[in-house]
Length: 471
Ligand code: BYC
Ligand code: FE
Ligand code: FE
Image (cartoon, rainbow, N blue to C red; front, top):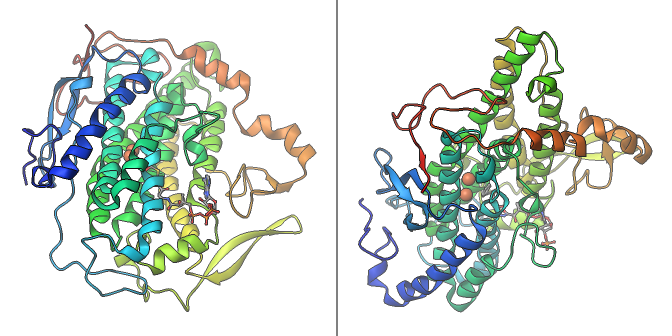
């Protein structure tokens, strides 16, 4: 289905048939543009960027590639096609037809889920605002901007749902999305990881590897929703999410490739002298980003999550592929807890454990990425292995929030933690070193010294293509 680009707001939801909604969104548009100019990618107003824009929601051929002046990017509203006779797949409404209108009894819960999801999108753009000043190459700069415009579009997706289904409350939430800001002491973003600074490129690649992956899993759970407009929105967003995780994974793989080459060349692990990112620092960044992302899944046992599930609003990852009753009332699931300084597990109701289940699916997916990283390292004949820290490490939400733990899951007293945390988390020195590497490289085909060039360019273009034109 083609998207209408004649409208002020490109869309495939027949926006022009609903004048009230169209007017409301057209009023929100200038507020969005002001926000983009003030808090989006810094000094990018004049850049022309080789971007992909959605032109249809079909699986093949939804994207169009061209140089676009960033402020002229056409943010739009795209929902995946409705599935004929789609049924609610889980919870107490299992088997009933999906809701195409807002189920009034679940208004508050849906509003909360959509607001929490929506809030993360502009948050990430704000967090990444400064990165354009220190890009390692034009290829990477273009990828940053591609991710940023799509996160902006994800905000549009959630604001559309709020405006279309939640009336005045929804419009107020739409305004609030642009009033909270990442890291703002008075009006922070809702989830903690979306307030952390992301102002060096190692952090950016870690962010798109780990934090956008939370996006993949949360969006997959919401794509299962019985509220069909939410499901359809999330299904299309997931097609974009895949690219964000590619940017993270390939960015990190290229950093490793460069680091390993330097280690071989100079026969030492201490490659800072040669302008590389040593594997110990790399591991510390993994420890930080992975642990703050585990917090994004909520508590291991959650009545909120149980309610969302029973109500048919938020399912599990790939719900329909799981072989159980999809009601979960009588099933158990193991969740971790700490007892006398040891991590144990206990069986609890599977219904209250759906957050934990999603977190474990996330961990498996992240581990597959780690395995690919370790393959890169091994291909250089180096026997260091990167790993994901234990879920007890550096947590602020859930069963491990009140304890200290090492990356291998030993519960520690505070004094030991204080003494040793610099071995496990990036120190001020580590961060300053990484920041010192962040010098802009903007000639076509040129590459910063701490990262290997990509094997191929974007959409068939060569690596030395001018992905960003400065004016
Ligand atoms: N920070 O019952 P619980 C993305 C609160 S990323 C602060 O376990 P629940 C993207 C919680 O609100 C995907 N507070 O919570 C990526 C609750 O508060 P109340 C984003 C937290 O609701 C990169 C209390 O603690 N999407 O798209 O089961 C770039 C009890 O917790 C946190 C979503 O998250 C936290 N980390 O689970 C761009 C999907 N965790 O009720 C974009 C929508 C918990 O006591 N959100 N709390 O006042 C949800 O499904 C749920 O809100 C959560 C939390 C899974 C986040
Ligand atoms: Fe997103
Ligand atoms: Fe994303």
